[in-house]
Image (cartoon, rainbow, N blue to C red; front, side, top):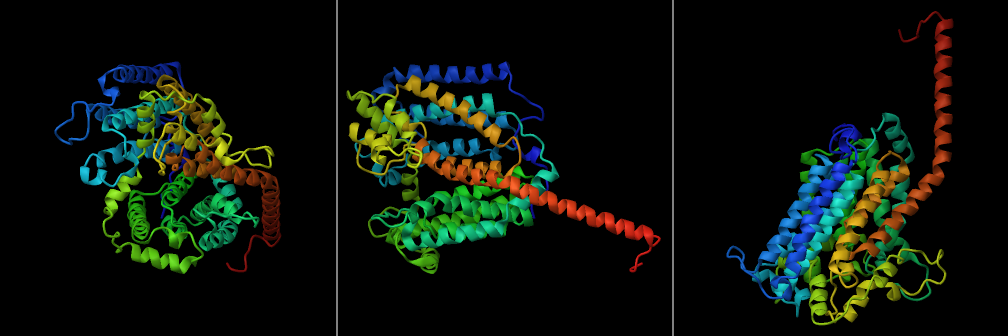
Length: 517
């Protein structure tokens, strides 16, 4: 069972009643200025010439520059923990920062071992010095993002009343959401969801399935937990439904979103529940990785149905990679390499290739806009800053993981990149604070959408906005249906009060006796 802590304790404020102050702004701004100055010195030093610099003895392939990048990431996490308090893990921004640490920190430590590095196809033609340089740049950018976020987004949430929770439970009916998820699941298991290339003039079923499947399943599981306070069964069903799609990121993001949404309503998961979810999730992730390593994505991209996908996942835990391919751990570490894209661009820029300017980065932010609102919207490739940078800077045609700040590397000089990321953090802090300031169904949907979006940090801002668009559409529908549902709830409450008043009058007329007494 979930613990019944109040949502104001689960909200994530550092101290009750704490507010933004000029002192806090100067503190975070000072940390950002110091780190930016250090980066500037290193940038103009010998490390940024691409040479390997002062390798340490503990892990030979980790240079001093890479150690500085890891230190910057540690400072970022420490500042976030200090600014948000003990409930810091229940904030979407924390998920974003920790995701950047996984892609830009944990993966780089694992790739420092030659046996793991051999499986990384992203680094072909990129020297180790530029990898460390790119990691330092990304780490500094995320530190700037965190500093901006803490300036505007560290206020605690307003206390949540029982009436707010009860209203959300009444409006969020998990049975309705589960029924809406069913056709999306059928389309996904028919090969017309994740990773499917739907061509021709048929109905846009893949777009609907890939856009709304995860958010609908996540909200259904969250509604079930809010009503019945049973987290583990809800996450078990959600994990099975999402795992059959063959994607790993939605699996992690969905579980985090359910915990964040339910904790916002006061149902904070216990440590034992979190550990149980982590263990089960790790097993499922290994199963998906095993299936891909052994037989590829074919079973997940064709009309195989749920039963065949479940059988493949069951065998994925014991499946061995194809002969000549690296082990699962090496493949996972290589798949989490979020630095090679930035490193390749920095190396090409040092060789004389000029930057593209801010235009492609700004245009890529228009990708989430539907064609219904923009009839003259060009094809997706014309707005894709990721593909444009791969072509212009001569990167290998592989599936890089650019990350949120990495998409700006080929567009802006590094000081402007740091500044823009700091402004983005301040904007994100204001938006997250507004979303989590009150407990309403539209804001709960947006909270789930924020977590799902930031968990896809690897793809950059355009993809994150596309994921958030689905949650915004659900929030708009919930807001439109809100007055009708509130009117129905008020009518039911009046009927209940009238019945209670009538019973009291009857009891008074009969002298207060009761047949059951």
